[in-house]
Length: 153
Image (tube, rainbow, N blue to C red; front, side, top):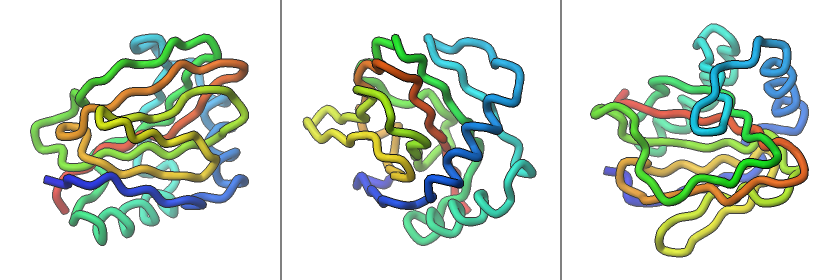
């Protein structure tokens, strides 16, 4: 069990983040999921990105990506209250990578009061089955993240 919450700024640069948002926008709008619009990604979409994340998560917790998605949170989204991830039983790690930060709100927060403000390129790793976490409401513009869930290497 990964009991820490780990944050890394500038994991991706602004150009890489914008490319993921543009890719998302070039696709058909995915089905709504609790007011968000998650687009599942195929590992062949961007092997360089997949390798970068996997190399980092292997060093962090001997984990590799099981599945990942770009998620659009509309500008009027009220947020998501404290919850555990409803991933798979073999999920050992979760991450949120902020692809933009030109909106208000959208902080990732934890039951203990810890809160991470969105910053383009910032990634947060944590065990979503262990850490009770939520997202504050989103205002002004849409929030885009790259959400990922990991399994043992």
